[in-house]
Length: 92
Image (cartoon, rainbow, N blue to C red; front, side):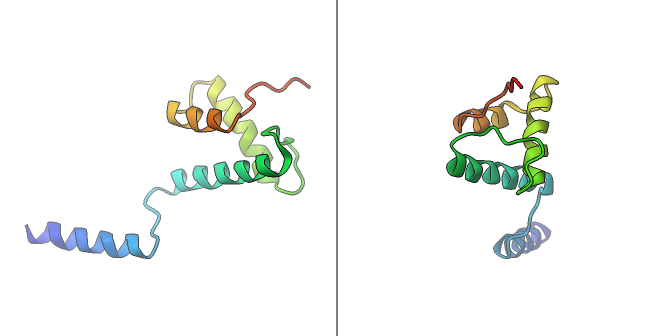
């Protein structure tokens, strides 16, 4: 079908320029990469909630713990976080 070919061609053009199809997923992956960088630098995933060098990362890490507790975090994301030794429980 001609319309399908046009769609596939346009989709490929968008892919070729790095078009983001799912911005929420892209944002989650970006934050995950920032956490991996933090762990590589500091040897831990225990990012302080008020981490001044990257306040968004501290908030994001706290949100992941809360989302898991409230069963709003996918098993795929839990596995990704577990794969880097994510600390789920922080005792102050």
